[in-house]
Image (cartoon, rainbow, N blue to C red; front, side, top):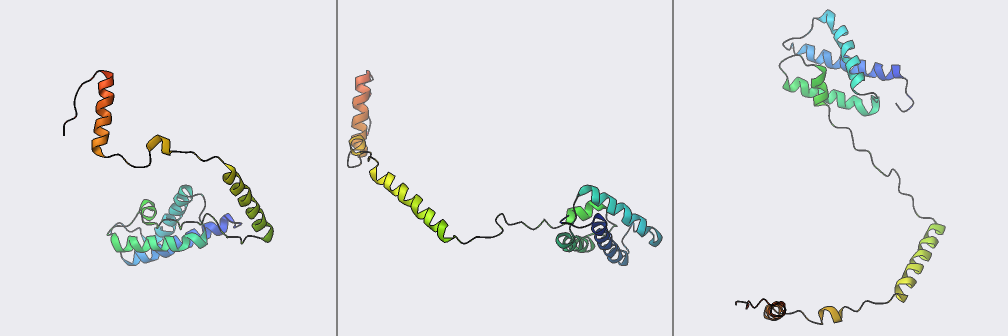
Length: 164
């Protein structure tokens, strides 16, 4: 809740539901509760939404709830249920994984340079693997591969000749 009181959180939720109900009531949707019952229905909605989402944040969720009520008003011909509000809620904004990029300090740059020097020295002194003896200097043609394959099969006792 980012240091907010639960009462303030519920007040914001009640306020947004009340505003949404006022907009929906003006549309006179089928199944609309009586005006005298709207407050009780709003209390039920607040309770159900609190159970659904333990933390409602006024800064983050106010616009989302308003957008959901707008979508309900545009698409519904009957009075909605809390499930409809949840269905129409826009997704939460994606939080950045790294909040701040810290510029490297002089000591950090020096440490990175030292690490790079150690790695370069280790790689410089490392023995090189000679692969020429494995594959040769050039690629083989398809005919050379067929001849080599035929020779190996001949040694194994399989005398099938490659077909061209």
